[in-house]
Length: 306
Image (cartoon, rainbow, N blue to C red):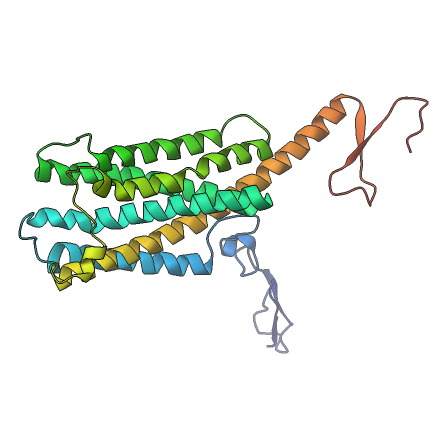
């Protein structure tokens, strides 16, 4: 008996022995490897992930786990603060990356005002959103650290007050981006506000030097001095590197999402214009050479369109 197979059907020739049982032709079901239901298809799906971001995310997760182990297990307690010092292993990296986000927003805003590039406008917006979240976390974690250290949740200290003002400025920047206005006008106004972030960051950083403050002095530079334990310094620097990876991962995804939102808004605007033209008695003209957007032309009886 000879059997012939293909991807979709299975057929059999008649046997040479009449006494043999014939094999009837059979058709395979829809569960063949070529069927769409055999494996999930990503056709038509748009996401912000890529192979690079997935690798970066895995490395970041592993770094977070290792940083938590170093901060909670291997790092020794402080002579004065005891185990409360472990909060600083997350507080200092977060506030540092909040500074980076604010500086990046200021730089991107300045370049946007210079070149009017949508790329830089999206970069400023994405960075400002992440910086806002990190600044809010900075205040919350700082309050948790201050309660056992100072005995109160909040004081109108120079460092705390200037950080709160920085958070309000970031919220104002994001609010300006959502005001009803033309896209270019809205981006220009937001960029002007974004220029104010860098001076505010400088004020926050120098507040413990310029004014009397309950907040401790510079921590990052002190890690290079012998008065801090080697394991504590390594844990702090490693935690900052991990949070920097997390900031990069968030920035890439938020930037890509903002870019997709920009494309959708542009498409919706073009469609809205076409709908209004159709309501006014115009019909789209898809003749080549007139750009990607359809050109409307009048359909008044007796008037020949060009």
